[in-house]
Amino acid sequence: MVKMNLPALEKQSSSCSNACNSAMSGLQNVGSSVGAVTGLDIQGAAATSAKNYAERVAGQLVNQTAQLLQVIQHDVAELPARYKSMVDRNKSWSTEELNKKISECDEEIFKAECDAGKARAKMLNPKADHAALESCIRNAHKAKANARTKKRKYQKKLRNLNIF
Image 1: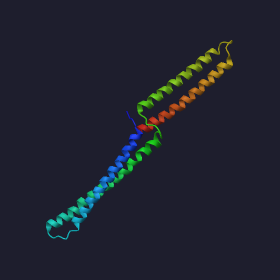
Image 2: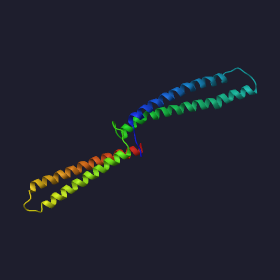
Image 3: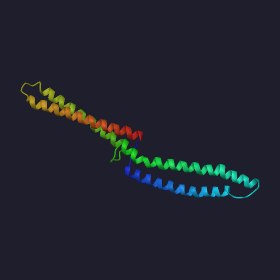
Image 4: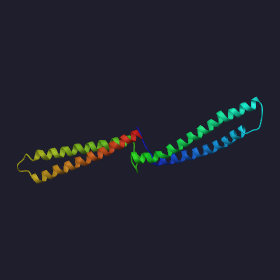
């Protein structure tokens, strides 16, 4: 089951952004330390080895980690907007809730079909009020069309929630 809590997602997105900013600040300090090591004016094999390590390994690790943090920060920040554009702008949904709504629409469609069928059967009676029965059939068809429209809307939300 997928269950979305939009306010919590927005809060977590903000918290993640703050954590990424904090981590990037720490990486800047590490980057400065790496730069300090590579800029030292010391001689010898061990010094050269330390400088090479700092430049090629630690420096690259810092740069790649900073890039990864920026990607994470960007993508997580977009999650609430993606949910709002794909599923619903204002409501948190779960697959269970949407399946229930779809079932309710199926019940409405079935009831409308039954109502129309009963009205058509009553029209066989010559003494029946045909105008009232025709109105009942039209209303049942409208109810059925409305329920189908709602069902398609909920099915689309469900598909998009599962994709999200």
